[in-house]
Length: 123
Image (cartoon, rainbow, N blue to C red; front, side, top):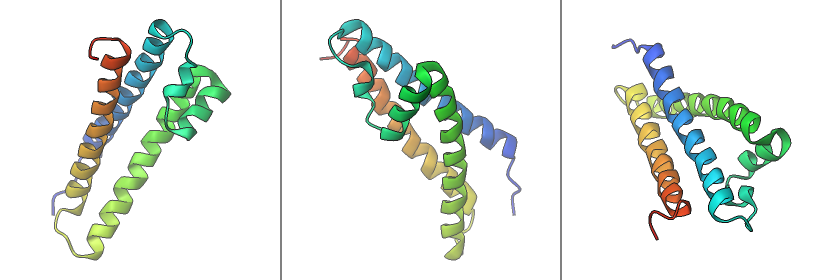
């Protein structure tokens, strides 16, 4: 059995969440700059994130929701690992980490696309 290096896993999770939250803030700033008549928080489709932004402002809401996202990612990692372990899947932790990393990659790609769209780089 390979013992995971939790430091590397935590660094990966923090980097993914930080990139996602940074792109979200950049999206909000792009909408604020290029579409002044639109409510800047209307682009956020996650109602929980939007509530954090409304309650704590953009900076503190992003930081607090980022911490919440890190905790959610870790819980999802353990739940997926546990589900795979029920079926005696070898390397359940590695598979779980890959699945969640790929899923978060799609989230980051979506944010990047909308940043380019809101910045009027792509139509």
